[in-house]
Amino acid sequence: MAKPDVSPRLSDTTTGKLSRLVRRICLLRELGDDDGAAALEENDLAALAQSHDGPPASRELLEAIFAAESERAAETALLAELIVARLTRVSSGREALVAAGHAPVPEAEPEVRPSGPPAIADLLDAMLAQDRRPRRRAHS
Amino acid sequence: MTTTTIEKKPAATAPEVSAITPPAPAGNRTSDRRRILVGFDLGTNASCVLAGPSDKPDITTSKIVPSVVGYAREGLVDGIIAGNATVLIGEEALTHRLQLRLVAPLEDGIIAHREASRDFVVRLRKMIDPSGSAEIRAVVGVPANAGQPAREDIRSCATGVFDRVLLIPEPFLAALGFRDDARLGQANYIDPVTNSLFIDIGGGTSDLCLIQGFFPTPEDQVSIAFAGDAIDKLIEEDLERVYPNNGISRSTVRQIKEEHSYVGTIRKPIDVKVLIGGKAHTLELGEVIGRACNRLIEKIYPALTSLIARAPSDSVEQLLQNIVITGGGSRIKGIDTVLQEKLAKDGYAGPKVRLAGQDFKRFVAIGALKAARNARDDQWQHLLA
Image (cartoon, rainbow over all chains, first blue to last red; front, side, top):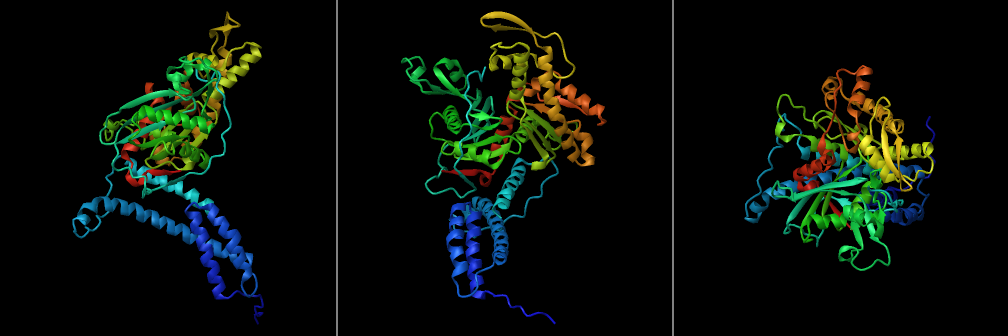
């Protein structure tokens, strides 16, 4: 017969508040605002982890929340970068049409690269993707 | 003659400067300004800058400038330096070395003195754009695997001087610069960007890079803090041991090296005339120079073979035909044949090591300008103070 779990548990509300706060910390780190993230962590998070009615949040729980939210923030940032890059390209081609009141044309299918020498812009894309990876690792 | 009285200081801790991709910050709109693209090889001993308008293939600035900044000493008589300038760079600084305190902005390929580096970059910008009104986008070469602090130092120095930058590893830029665009697609032409191994021997670092059609990963690049300056130091130390209290300056040592450097079997005699205490002496330096230069081979060769080992087996045969040495170190006599013989002796199939040629000082900047001309708008990094 399984032993009943008698360890003190946090309410879902408290866990939700902790998750939201940790998400803000991770997003600030992703944006490069390490000072802002540190301030939130040292002040707001420490206070929230202790202040609610019930047991203090365990280190394991906080680590689990940080791991989950770091990953979410990193994925969100990656998605945002892709969207910004795509919108920049699309908007430069559509600006005139939009200004003239035409409906935006659907985005062209990605160009199939001919089997020739590698394009410099594509190589730079790869370099920038590499540059971003260690930054993320450092923040996670 | 670039380092005789040069003062080298450790880099101060750089405040972090954000490098972000568009959109551009408000109040920093650049769309109405004339745009100049720059390829910039910021070297330990010499820097190369190429620049041209973004809408034409012309090159309007092409300069190789010794990487040195001179600050006027106090109490200088009016008119000794034209315009009573207090800061000079490059040849002008060296010409007035007696009246200036000379500072080397870089050491071992990275910024060692931030204030001097910024002064250097500011004055280069004036050469590129005397009006100061153009939008400047610069691709800047960095040593292979330069760390984040070294990159931030460059961004920090470029903030407020250039509008946007892209930092790209130097050996990759050298390959891009070495690429003969007119011959791309020809059956007998191996595109260095598609399959090559570049060895860029500069003043501060020797950088090796495996390039196989995609951007090299950190594992495809090796940076060794042993290059021209380290050879100078070894020769200087050996000279001091063999000829104590000789008083020969580092810049004289460098001149001797540039004229007589070689690798391979020790060559004797190499008689070199020098002035010691104002008197002419002839020194036999064959062994001293050979020993120092051969150390470079000892450092480079293991990195070279480790990068060859990384190449997929079906690409190695062609890769071995395309090992290119560039940078100042490519002038060391016999460096191509010694490396080639070593590879052949170790069983590599038909290796061919060649020298990049006379333009060795410019390939990184040529590649940087090509990258600048091909970079999409969203790939440039804004510099925010």
